[in-house]
View 1 (cartoon, one colour):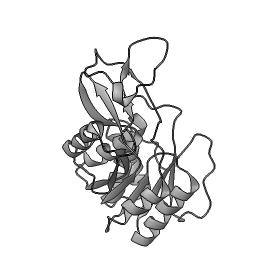
View 2 (cartoon, one colour):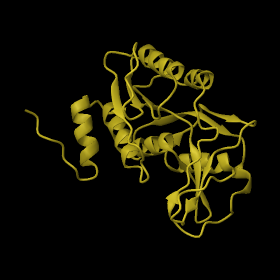
View 3 (cartoon, rainbow, N blue to C red):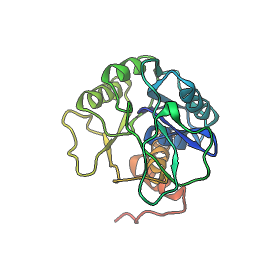
Length: 224
């Protein structure tokens, strides 16, 4: 089983709420390969979160460890069709429909991970082989993810900010991906998800990386 850590957000396109954000994209990509995936994070306890959970379920992603917090609004992205850049959208005033696709409007309101939430969510899960911290996180969250991987004998995949140093105290076999400055089409997240799925299926890291590239028709460089 793969555990993906990160808080999902919602995206509204053509009037339909879908699960978005790095964690959702990684989890959905891994689940699309047929692997068992659970998402650990936090959303609001609102209609927007209901749409996110429904979309995750349709995509084969489990959410038993996804905490619902009534004190927060689930972050929402809507398409922007202007050339002036995205505008933040208040979930409570979001339009019911969208005119069409465009660049997503990104809001980070309420999307940061809380160490206590992650720790609690991980306690719901056992028997996982891969832990993916799908978005850059604070040191205390990284530490909890690392401890969960050690406790479960799982491989840890860590996504860090561009240029960010790898934290100390991680498992020796940690696999680190540096996130791009932007991932508007979810290509990077999909690669991480497929990589995690290949690891969960028993591949070594080199084989897993080649498999994740080959999924979209890319090929890696030949080994020396």
